[in-house]
Length: 233
Ligand SMILES: Cc1cc2nc3c(=O)[nH]c(=O)nc-3n(C[C@H](O)[C@H](O)[C@H](O)COP(=O)(O)O)c2cc1C
Image 1 (cartoon, rainbow, N blue to C red):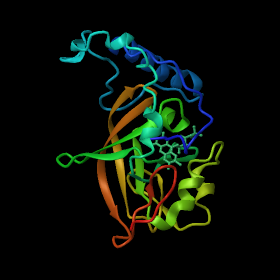
Image 2 (cartoon, rainbow, N blue to C red):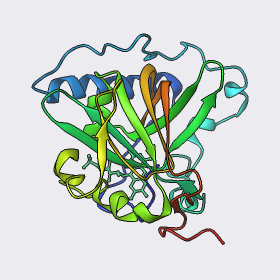
Image 3 (cartoon, helix red, strand yellow):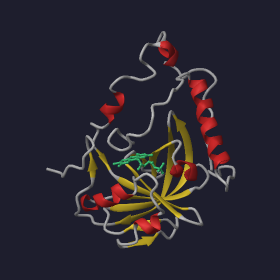
Image 4 (cartoon, helix red, strand yellow):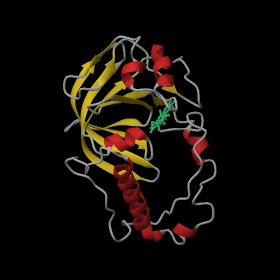
């Protein structure tokens, strides 16, 4: 998940936290993806969850004044609190046919062992989210502590494609996803999207891990904490 140290230029956006309306907001975002893209096509994921229940989920309605609580729309301190959650840093890479795209992502987590599912969270109005709104295959590479330079490259605004960003480091192309995968990472997974869930200003993508590519098993992870990459003690 992007934290204040990751991209400061983004202006805060007004969000509506009614379940129904937030979903509409997200659906609009996803439709916007299609409209913005010259290669626009309907999403092809196996199941795309873009609707919320008409009624609030159980328990949701039990918070009186929830939607209008003062400060709820901004939750002061929330964004900076996120930077205090230590997270592994990954690269998500996608082959879109014409180009290779990659992005640094720390909002990655395992979801299920049987079946093997993982989740990534992407800034909803970012290009990688647009791509994964319509393409199903991607790779996630869990970076090693020595790969900090890659984390910076793949987070830079206006960055070129992954082919150029990986030009001077050993890498290969995933057999299943076709995505570029840097070598010397802790591990990589090739995934196929099984579900997309709009969530506030992010898009959650749940992927079925189809292969695990073991890497530097004795290496330390690259960790993001409070805007820095501290070494493991
Ligand atoms: C350490 C770190 C972690 C990040 N984690 C995420 C993340 O989990 N999800 C995300 O969408 N962007 C994340 N970002 C921001 C993206 O890497 C990237 O800057 C952003 O998507 C803008 O990309 P764009 O130019 O493609 O729009 C992170 C950046 C850094 C440096």
